[in-house]
Image (cartoon, rainbow, N blue to C red):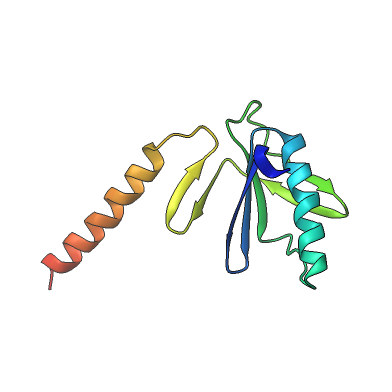
Length: 109
């Protein structure tokens, strides 16, 4: 059922990545059933979705089953920047920035 969408789950953070809004809605329904069965709830503030690749560039949220989900163009997951165009430039720049902070932090000590 979830072959058209991926759920990235770590602790209490969930990110839905899909190729279409329909796939996001299907994944959201399956997610809601799973969490309800285990007694958990969906935190709308922490649940985002991203369409990859973005066909519209439209980042408006949508409602499903009483929940409003925010559509994002990029997000950070476990320290890695993921964006809706599958571009690595933002991630590479982030890694260079982090490396520079470490290098110059050590150099000044």
